[in-house]
Length: 343
Image 1 (cartoon, one colour):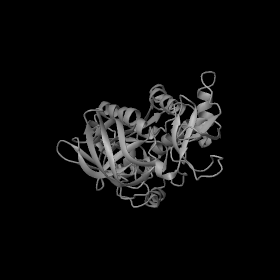
Image 2 (tube, one colour):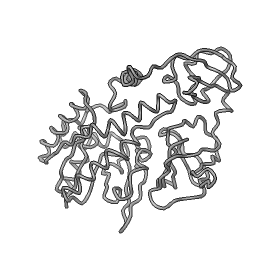
Image 3 (cartoon, rainbow, N blue to C red):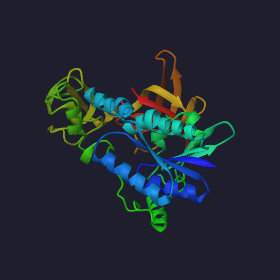
Image 4 (tube, one colour):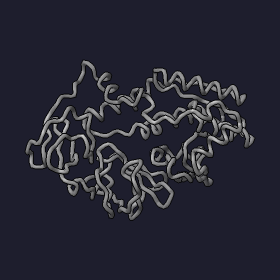
């Protein structure tokens, strides 16, 4: 059998390629060139080096134009408008898996493999997405919007690994040269995690983030902010306000205002979603949800509001700071049902 492995030059995807080869697959590597900077160039070099070591062919696909459109421009636009983007969700839905699956079809391969920490359960005509064994490393939250037609051909060899150390141990024993390569702790297309400078550079000559008022929910001016790009829903630290404690309740990009409140006010109760997607069939009823990737799963009711013409989430447990632009993902145990963007 033949498989295509998405190889980023990191230890996870490299180990996945090694494991698939060990399992007897005819492995073809595929690296996506997503953007142009030294990080991207280094990733391509590492991926080529690992492929050479594993004695597998590899092809590099230029995705920079689509990545700019669907991820970078989206990322910048959301911050400009006071929203909190989730670039990994967008990349997985519109770039990574679509490009890799097209390459899989071109190669007439049976499986599309990546180094994500998640699990796929395949049946005759459909697939289910499940959380990985390592909840600390689990990446299923970022995969909920990947289309069923792609998931049914996908495989994640690291899904059963209890920790990243298991992956590194396998890579070391195999002699893979990136076994000790550090994890990427920042947004892949931004150097040194300085997203503010990146966004300002992208908007140079087009838009400038200006200082403005910090107000309470009644409109009373409490202080000044140094640009809405520096704030997110639920934020408490760095507001520079006396009294309180205050939390960011809303970001009004049109008025260039940060609205703050007490903690009770930022408690999320009902969430409306945009672009809701279900991995299998639509679901209504009680399940658990996450409203941020590193958040806890909490009980909620999912329903479709025909008046608002959108899916709604009624939270049955306390959660704070639902940020517009982030994603609410639905779970049935460790199975991912779907999700949508918080509106």
